[in-house]
Length: 515
Image (spheres, rainbow, N blue to C red):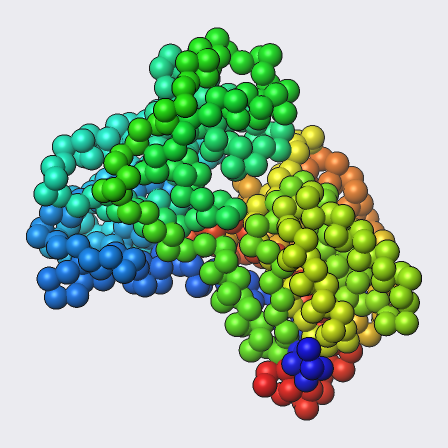
């Protein structure tokens, strides 16, 4: 790759550094600002209104849904479930007009008031809406309110005829909002098993394996499998008891299962769930993490960085993921003359692929770009949903914990980072809420650990208690936290590493980076 294609960002400068920033440079604060802009672009690309307008439209006498044509004759019914569904439903009703007969959506408890307070009136339904909104699933767990919503959705769908069109809106969080435990499993037993699996670090794919028309789907699952997004209610899928038993065994829960769960798993066959008729169902992924990363790449390029997408499917424990990002930063900053060190770093990075869900081909491509553009301004992008094992009783979320762990990795490798090289890491949830906090995520850099210790904060102690939110709130009055408010969308998390070029600030190089 020609060096002229490598970015050399530096033209976007803050007029002055805020008070209380200690040894932070204007250069570092510029990276923070740019990182927030890139993250904002990622989220904006997958907002419900944008997704729906791109996938649902009336053209004369035809209703176009993801490129397929249907004949709407005032016969469209709508159901939906998920964290982002309220905004999707509002957009759908504006598009469908009188063709919409009625609808029912199941959404998280308190989301209407939260969106109202966030000033997102466009995501709310009007007083004359034909869609009924039912809230439930407090703390993202199935509850009685969610079961009542599921019953209302079932009632609407079961009353339709072959002349009707059912539009199903699905987004992340739908599993908890459409609970229908297989008898004799009770809701309480399902809640307990879900809590235990999540606390032990089970992935969303594993959870949805166990908690098993025209669908417009906003994906919050790695690789966008329709059968796993909100547990895939519109996708016929085989019931595999062996896979369920293996997951329960992996997390040490097999021996403590309620008898009702044992009975259901023992009775499962290989005939499948029988949901719907495949020939009459059309599932369309209208928004995903990959789309968010595409928009983030465009914004990064506009800021003078060369964007490099590692993967939209990063997973695994946050410790492993943070280690990977630390190694990639060291590799990007390694002097060309240190061939031995570079070889060992390359080997270590490639060895981490299975732990973080990134294939060798993606790692090799990323390493190639980092090597060829060493010294230029780079933006390394990825997405996914790492997991956190809960050991403490603190307050935080996976994005804030990941950012803090990356900061520790950067501090440990600080001696190998050239002094002129500016590095910033950002991890944020596209839904705007990282765990039970008011932050979407946080920003880290090589100075974070020393800054924290100067203020009497021990990062390791906070990590041991899963208390990353408290840490970032106390550090420099919380200025590293990413606070977007509730976004109304959800396509997992976005991670980005900004590496400022060695000649940042040069107008000529900044211009070259944008060409």
